[in-house]
Image 1: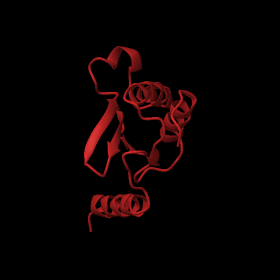
Image 2: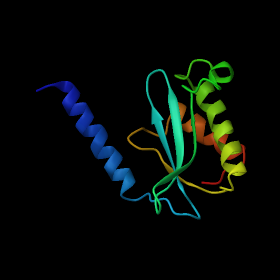
Image 3: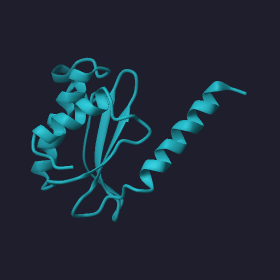
Image 4: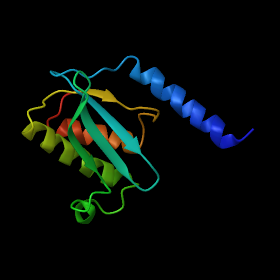
Length: 122
């Protein structure tokens, strides 16, 4: 049995377990994150209409100079602050946090704390 299939299956089950409890609405959209080895990204999604309201990623060319390498806690914290500013400009004040298959630790926690400090409620 291929170990990648086992790990992918576990990641998918964890993601489904979180998503069955977290649903975004127009008043309180869902903030979902994506974490890879070299990049970090997140989106604010309104699930009732299936539309992404705001997004930010360390792979964006405009943010490459500000963020630098996207695979560390410092970059995640900067992205959290940028996302909170963009969301507040779009009129989103509170979100429900969808951590996906990732533990609330390290880059994920740094991102969440920075977004909270910048004024986003969740």
